[in-house]
Image (cartoon, rainbow, N blue to C red):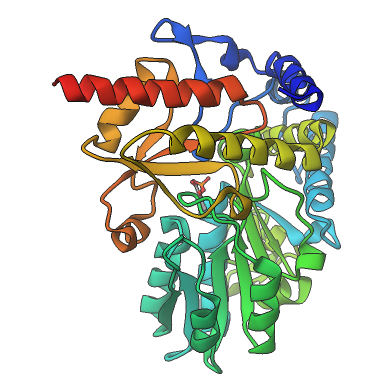
Length: 416
Ligand code: PLP
């Protein structure tokens, strides 16, 4: 190991002490948590921020005059500002809190669809989307008469950009795609796609669920029109997510959920919606969760976004090398230079569920199944796959343990 690599591992060892759960054992072995694409773990700083919110500053936001309500409101809006800074968004009014990436896409699909889509208009998705970025558009297409088209993949699991150009047409109103595939790990060339889509007059929604937690994100230089992500995939709590949008687009989109907080005025014969961002935030928001997300953003900023990205690339390259040595194992997706920290694979004659169970017995947590991407698995000719997904707190030793555990799992199956 080089000097730089050794000092990185030492830094990771120190950072891991911030995550109480990473110290536990599973099946009598140290936990190797490699299921970060599903959900990450939380550092003490996030748990403490949420506890403090409940123990010292808790009241409903936006409505109260009393001290606790004001303190809760300040913490809540400070977190909105942290998200704005994270995304380099022009203003905090363009940051809408939802209960997760799925809720944010549903909001966008319903609201954008109601306002802008007519029968025969086209929505362009890709073959690698998570169900969260498929089903809401299918529902929107059913409601509006819009037509969905899918950008196909190359055999190594990247978007076929020539086909994208052919599919992009005068009727394309929206391109909705993931920044990073949650199965293949593929990092999509967003800037290129967005500029081509804009040239054709289409808006672009980016599903940032697997990118925002892992790499720097600047919505203004990217030029995306809408972007979503979830808190729990970036050290934050469950129950909070974000929709960012271009101001003029959000202003033209109608509210999705109705209720308290999202109105300027209500009469017996109708209502006037509030200004951004509140017109999209009906009801009591996830207050402690938003504050927890703010603490997660602070923590990640201190760890350093460039370092996080480099670290995950290192782990992914190591995983490709280690898994590449296993006979009968096929990695699904492109080479490491085109992907984030997600390595999915299939092993001859070993079902993904059996693989995940045998790994769990060795303390290694991975995910098996279709990972909410059934159409993608159909395209790949698989019913399921096994997925290891990394965050900066994973170690090279855990990557080696994954490979060793897989060899053992194969041996167990051969004996059966
Ligand atoms: N989009 C992608 C690419 C994902 O990986 C996920 C979750 O796995 C989602 C959307 C949905 O996120 P959530 O379940 O937090 O709403």
